[in-house]
Length: 186
Image (tube, rainbow, N blue to C red; front, side, top):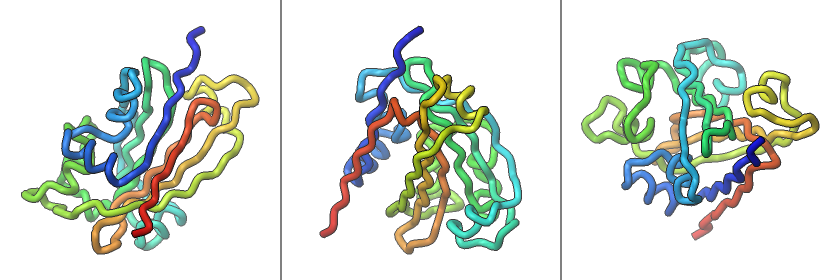
């Protein structure tokens, strides 16, 4: 059995800008920078009714339609994260975000496209991290050994007018991830 890849995620504005200007999704860029091969497997793109938690974070009514993009992130061929991203259906209707296919440059390229229908600039995010034991499905999907906890990361991404664009829920193995946040206060 191969040892699990250790993924270090540096969350900073400068990283985001550097990766966006290179046309790379953040996960892919950071995993590549660490000498590993990144891959994102798109499991599903579907429109569903929003849960209370997602609706609150997106500032929409509970039960409002949202498009969810479900992906598995891999490093060197091994699953390291499950990531579900939720978008208000009214915001992403008739865009590549609502279509079950990969998006060149990632979702933010569609959101920030100055000639596209959304045309909003990503500004900042708020993240909540919770450590817990995985569900059986999460443990199987991530290939976790018994007793290995996960970290659930709920990230809400906002535009320059502080309007929510996306709620991203990731579940990652606690024993293979390191997080570092750089917060510029002024």
